[in-house]
Amino acid sequence: MRKFAGPLVSRMIPRIPALAAVATILLILGIGALKQGNPTAAWHVLHLPSTSPHFIDTHTVTNSIDCVLAGQDPFTIRTFDPWHRLYNYPPIWLDLRYLGITSRSSTLMGTTLALLTAASSLLLFRATTWAGAAIVFLALTSRIVFFAIELGNIDQFVFALLVFGFFLIDRLPPHRNTLNGILSGLLIAVLTILKVYPVVGAIIFLRSRRGLLKTILAATVAIAALVLTSGPKLPIFLANTPRDYMMSFGSFPFFLALVNAILPSSQSRLLLHPNAASIGAIVIAAVLLTASLLFRNRLVQFLPRLDFDHARGRIAICGLAIFSLAFIFGANYNYRLLFLFGALAYLVEDLNNNPSRRPLLIAAPILFLMWAPFKLTLIHEIPDGLVFVLAITWLGTSLLPRASQRENAALPQLRTLQSN
Image 1 (tube, rainbow, N blue to C red):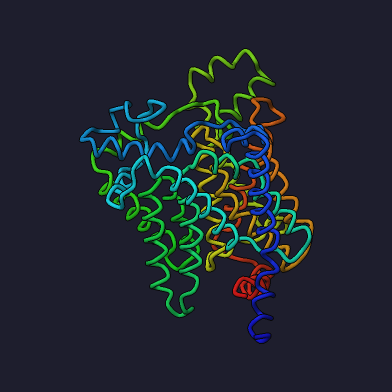
Image 2 (tube, rainbow, N blue to C red):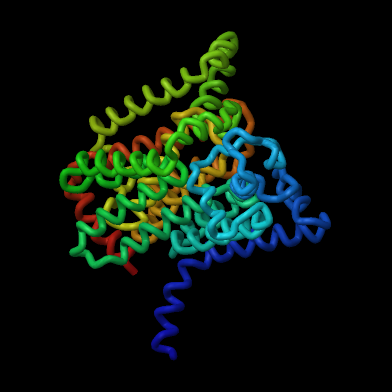
């Protein structure tokens, strides 16, 4: 028994910060529910908005299934939704009706999504230093986690599938590179079918042999799968997606706060032309990628090279790419910051391997963005823009094909740690 208990304990210790965070969430919600008298009111303890019935985004799926079962089209009919919203997710979610899912399953489905978020986070995060433990605890108890759980948002399922998928692929024997690549491409395709934006995860192939060709192929397959599964509903659900430019993060609130602080008279122009913010973000991204190319040898001292060959590296790459795409496209609810967990987990691994201040400097603005309430002021939007700059620069320094000798020497250590 001791022979097996030793390795088990050694594997569980790095997960203690994540376990403590999950326990804290349950404790806070439990105390809030007891104090306020009902689960919905418990969210007010955390100063978060709450709805009744619970899991508003889960109801988007389950009530739309009721609409389909009644022989009507949830893409055009609002009457089955408690908030009179049109269905705005890919059609594949409506196939859950074949598993018996209806609006009566909303609480079960929302709870399951929360449990998947907890389980995937326990798998993703492990810390062997006090600084790493602090990062893990602060990330998992941040506002974005509570918000995603309260909404019952399906991004939780996409995030969990991303984590579980790459960890399962990572279990393949090292010599099966072809199968690894095929399964990774299929995972990106499945994620794209579920929520569109994970198509940018195809950049995980850029560092491999014939990387650009593989990236284009993976993205093409993912888009083709989305088109085939969505059919004529694709433009409809994209059109149904809310476009509230005053959401919590993204290029529009960032540039609007910047304009309000510097040129208040230009605010009305930006409000009339919100796409200008996306164009501005694309320009910034292009400049940052160019700078990453020109100053790469200096930047790698501050940004740990992302490992394209193992689970945590790939999850970090996909998460940074998803955040960057979301930022460019305007404005988003902050539950989508869940995808930055991959980057934070990678920084914690860097701390596990070589304790330094470097990961702390990168993690600080990400955690601030996850914790800060949304206020359309420059001081609140600076972390938003800073994380975008970090994400693009980090991807830029890692996507470039040639690694320095110092980086190549450091990667085996990190890979050895990740395999334990």
